[in-house]
Length: 295
Image (tube, rainbow, N blue to C red; front, side):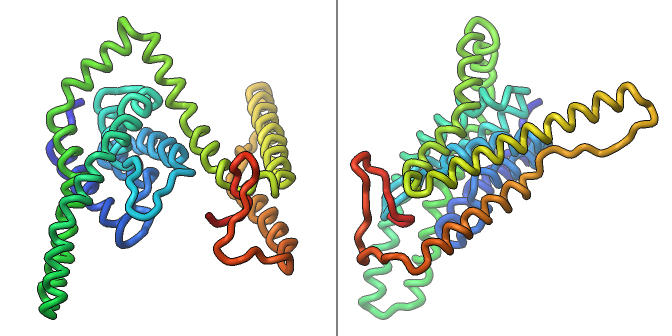
């Protein structure tokens, strides 16, 4: 299925807007999971979009920026991976490892270019400040959004409009002579969310709250086993006894979230009234783990 012109237009416009949302509005529209949702909605395969977007969201779970530093653009990678995965019937895990992650890493250069070109408007604003030209300040402030948007919009547009044949040839190779490599990329794409969790745990005070981490893991594993067995038994009985009917739902994520909230509330109450660390000081272990909740 070829990508239609209106799909290219919508995805390109979203790519240009999402960076502005990330810089100004701070809504969930600029998150990879929403990028996957929107791309899947536009391409007509919401499930694939959510799978790729959710995987990329977990991959960058512990990735952040400080000051003017750049980070990988998981949103653009999610949009392109979803579009090509749906249009070419590609396995989502392969699309994540082959398109989403490399594109997200390459977009760092476009982020740097967007920041660099934006300094032109910053210097013009400085000149208008000296002359008390408030209209000029507002005009150049708004114009600064143009290089930011183009730094995401143009690469996504060019890739969707002219990169289809290249991606199609790569898919044919990975599913043909290099199928072993394609299978390996699928495994790598499935493992990437675990990398995001590992990065996040690296910055969390795991040693300080290790009992809660272990308890949460055990509760989740036990409930998953119990609910899974109940579903299996219910399905087996339903195939034997025709009169038997019932609804056997899986493990509700809301229940897991409530358990996590309860453990967090217990930890918070236990820490109230404890010693307060000096302002600006952070305690780090020998291995470099951050003991405080803030860096």
